Image 1 (tube, rainbow, N blue to C red):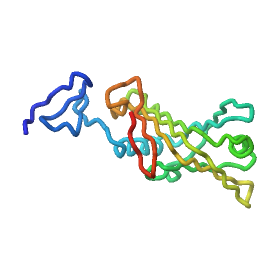
Image 2 (image 1 turned 45 degrees about the vertical axis):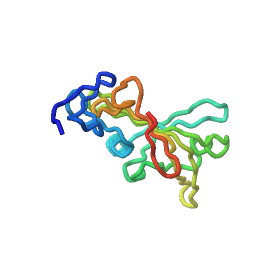
Image 3 (image 1 turned 30 degrees about the vertical axis):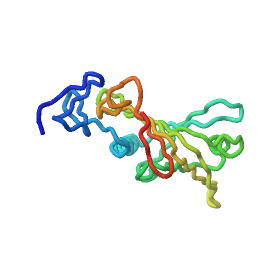
Image 4 (image 1 turned 60 degrees about the horizontal axis):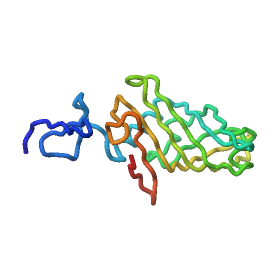
Length: 179
């Protein structure tokens, strides 16, 4: 196998010799292409940032966002779910239970990353579990789609389209990269 670097003119990605399984960016770092490396970076971002914006849909049909703190231990290792502790009488619980709008979005932005440009959006169906103790409730988001952009890690659409995020969708218990 040749060890010479070759540039793919169409994508702007580099390949080492004849091996086309691992693309590299212009700074010679590997570009995460499959679902697993993107999930690894996504979970690390959520753990590092700690606070996410949660958007629900109000009874009037308008989006409503607020900050929540899922924390690292409340993000499933495979990012299939995210859990948020709250109170039973919050608007997020009302939006999910009363208005029939169970689709939600969680959004993390890492302003400390390289180029201060990493962000992650987890979209899914929310359910609420009420506690008998102290007016507590738990919102669990079953994540169906992840969108992520992180220029420092080269996570963008197809590893090179910086105007589009990498997109993963979950089907039949497995993540698939669709962009």
